[in-house]
Length: 68
Image (cartoon, rainbow, N blue to C red):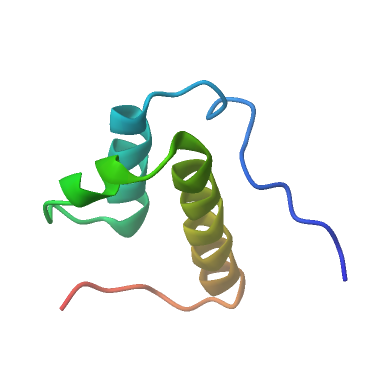
């Protein structure tokens, strides 16, 4: 199984608030995700990486993500 890089160098050292904003951007949502602020920075970084990986997978397959 290949190793996955969990965060980009730009995300290292970001505050929890910045990471939550990054997640909001990746999800293309204006939903209140402030509850994520309770997570540890390391966990938020991992969540950002997982979301980005999934978004990239969908984009590579030519699917369009839409909001309902």
